[in-house]
Each structure stands twice: as C-alpha cells, then as structure tokens.
Figure 1 (cartoon, rainbow, N blue to C red):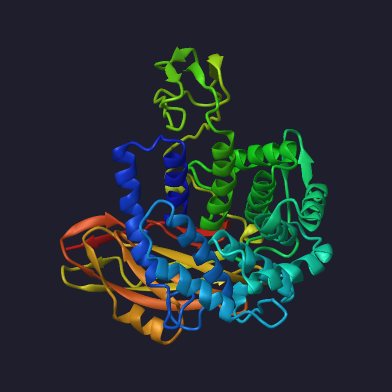
Figure 2 (figure 1 turned 120 degrees about the horizontal axis):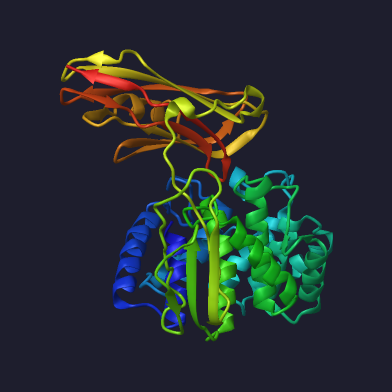
Amino acid sequence: MTFPNVLVLNYLKQTKQASPEIQLKAENYISLGYQRLLTFEPPGGGFSLYGKPPASVMLSAKGLLEISDMAKVYPVDPALIKRNRDWLLAQQKPDGTWASAYSWDSPALSGGDALPLTAYVTWAILESGLKDDARVSKSIAYIKENAGRASDGYVLAIVANALVAFDANDATARDALARLDANKVAEADVTYWGTKVGSFTGAYGNAASIETTGLAAYAFIRAKQYPESAQRALTYLVQKKDARGTWGSTMGTILALRALIQSAIDAGDATADATVRVEMNGAQAKPITLNKENTGVVQVITFDDVNPGANRIVFKVEGKGSFAYQVSTQYYLPWSFVPATPEQDKLVDIQVKYDRTSLAVNDEVGVNVNVRLTKEGKARMTLVDLGVPPGFSVVTEDLDAAVQQKLIARYELAGRQIIVYLEEFDSKKPVTFAYHLKAKFPLRAQTPSSTSYDYYNPSVSAVQAPVMLTVR
C-alpha cells in the first residue's frame, strides 16, 4: 500500500498538517515500498508483476504514476523516472499508440483496443512532467481522433484524464468531460460510473465502479468542470470505504484517494471550527473539537458497551464546517455460527486438508490445498492466504517446487501466514499444491483460517475454517 501512503503524505505536506512524527512514520513506510518497487523493474526498464521480463506497458505506466507522485514527498532517483518513461516511449508505435503485449495491458473485455492503453500511458507520461515532446503530441493526436468512439465509462474516464492533463481547455477534452458526465448513474445523493469492459486489473461490478468513479471524479476536479457531479462522486466514494479505511483493492484505494485528496487540496483552507458530540444509546463520548489545526486528523471514538440488536447513534455538530464520518463494528463470531455459503453463490472455493492432526515435536504434517473458480472466467491475480498455526515452521521445499512447476506464480512468508499468488487463474484449471509444516513445540493449537480471493475483486472470496492440531 505504498502508493496510498504517498498520496496521503503529499496531502498532509501541501496542507501543512504533516507533524514530524507523522511524516517520519509515513516516510519509513514509503522507503520500504520504494525499495520493494525497485525489485519489480526487470533488466531493460519498465515494470513487471514480479520483476521478471517481459515488462508490462500498463504496469510500467502505473509504476511511472507512482514514482512521479512519490518524488513529491520522497527522494526518488530521477534516473528511475527517466529510465521508465524512456522505456514506455520506446514501446510507442509510429501512429502514437501502445499495443497490448501482456494480459494486464488491456481492460478485461476491451478486445485489445489500443485507445484505453494509449490514453493511460499518455496520462502517466504527462503526470511525470513531460509535455512538450513530439511523441506525446503524437499520442494526444491519436486520442483526440479516437475519443469520440469511447463510450464505456472506464475508457472514457481514462481518455478524459489524458486530455485534461494535456490541455483542460481543449475542445476535445471538454467534449470528453461532457460525455463522461452524461454517462453517469445518479442515485439519491451519489453519482457513480460503471463499466462493461472491466478495468486493467480485471475488476468488475462494485470494484470496477469504484475505480471508474475515482477516475471520473479526478478528471472533473482537475478540469474544474461539473462540480456537482464531482462532489456526488466523492460522496459515493466515501460511502464505499470499508471498515479498514480502504476501498477493497489497492487500485480502487489509489484512485479513490487521488480524487478525494485532489479535491481537498483544491479546496485550500476550508473553514472549520466546530465541536462534535457523539452519543450511543444516550451515553455521550468526550466532545471532539475540530479546527484549522486538526481537520486532517482522523478522530476515533470507541463504544464498548453495545447492546444486542439495534443501537442508536447520534451526531451533533456545534459550529461550522463539513465533516465526513464512518461507523464500523467489530465482533466475534464462533466458527460454528458462520453460515456456509450456498453452492450456487460461490465464486471461488478453497479446500485445505491436513494429512493428520496429531503429531510429535519435529514431525512434519502435510497440507494439501485445492483452489478453484466456480464460475466460468479468469482472475488476473488471485491470492491464497494459508494460516500457519503457532509453534510450527514452514518447510518451503514443496512451495519452491510449485513455483518451478508453475503451479503458483510466487509465495511469501508473512508472520502466521503463507501468501500464495496465482496469476491468470482460470476456472477451467483448478490449482492443487502441497506443503509441509514442522512442529517445534508440544502444544494444542488452532490454525488460523485460510482464504482465497480475487485481489482486484475482493468480494470474490472463500474461507476455510481453522483446524485443531495437537503436538505431543
């Protein structure tokens, strides 16, 4: 989540709200993310999914957007920006377009149309600071010539961003914004955009709507056009934020934050001077004072005494200002109470089986994993989180072999879990692999649950209940 940290730190610095403590913490996260990002640059330039050639044009454009924004808040090597921008320009075709050479280079159902990729790459190059260049002008000419056939919300939003980044007052940019506004879906107090072609990440449904709406709102805000639609789109994005403060996937979070933060920066010093009182079931928490010094700080109020059933929460604002709020809950549910997902509603299934549940210290237990998509289709990036019980270590030989055999793309060990990556996961090709755990101590322990989910469509997920293991 390096890119979201970059966006937030940029906002805090521009609004002069970055305290030394917050800035140091954010820069530490960004430093780690920057070093990790460098591992995704294969020899020759560009970026790929795992740092191995060939590089992907779309992933390279996304990487260029990230390091260009990162350079505003962190000492990024200028040679890295130039090297990757030069790599992208070297892939440009004589007509100013970029062609799909990798699955990530096209929205899922776009049929390989060059327009969305060309617009996305051009936007990234412009955001990196290169504008007065014949190659950029050639791409803009292609986008202008073909913008009229962009009818899908996602493609049109990317086209609008490229044109606005080049010249927001250009007639073609204004026309793209007008058609984008006409493409919106208005419901109650929100506006959003859907897509039939999906996104570059393979997102669809609500996940794709978040990405598309973030792109559309950003284009309107940068162009200073259609402020009502932009504000209603921001309301939609705020309402779609999950309990963890993100928007499901990394890409959804990036695009939502870009729009929200740009709006906040453009608003400048919004006047805020108020006291907020929050109560639940008549019990009032300590009042919160919000003013110019702390409007960018998230205030958290916790109520521990929650009644079963309905609970009444009241917000009272005394003073002036407009503030967003979110209510989230945490609760414990025993596995015996977790309802099974009906077979017809399953989109992905995971089965994790241990070859035994009782063993001695230094013994190994074999674990077999089977993951399958239950609906026809393909997921560009699927993650399998396998819980590792306390007191056990992971024997990695089987996992290394699974990578070599291309059963899995890669894996990582992270605390009490194994994160397995499946790329281009096809419903016609279930994935089965095995690994071993070694018992280190005598104990009786429950494994964490194991999950499988589409990284860019998090609602497509499945959970395997924990298993009790006994070590003598």
